[in-house]
Image 1: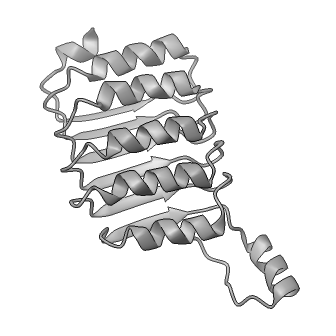
Image 2: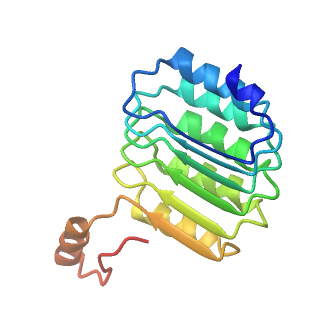
Amino acid sequence: ETLRQLNLIESFTLCVGRNRVTDEGVRAIGEGLRGLKQLHTISLDLLKYRSTDIAAQAILDGIRGLKQLRSISLHLSKSRVSDEIVLSLSKVLSEFKELQSLSLGLSDTQVTDLGAQAITDGLRQLKHLRSLSLDLLRTGVTYEEGVAVRRELDHVESVDLNISYTCREAALEKRSTGSRRTCATM
């Protein structure tokens, strides 16, 4: 109810991570977000929140109607988010036709190549997107899929992509195959 009373705000930041907020509390936050029709920038940090797909879906349902958003920062790192919620996330994000900046923190989640491809499919439709930060470190996303994500989003001017391919893996591959691949975050 309090969030709905703040319907004139243009920028909103909320850090839920490391607090004892329940899924029901996150659902209430999602419901409150629906009324923020003047919002242009939103930052939601659920880092280390023991988020389930149900709670994450409540947040997505909350921002779904906010088509005026220009900047979204959503951090679900170190949660139990899976490819299923990332598929839903991709669909929601594809609806933000005027979105210019996106930061997605999905490190230490259960996201795999399937989720990364879904994100790519959704973001490909966002022709105004100029800045993307996508953290997929310590997920099930392979180096090859990370390269595909970057290649398929060539319309985005600035891309900060962090994937699971580590320096150790690069060294092992180089020894076993003679690969010339170097260690770097994308």
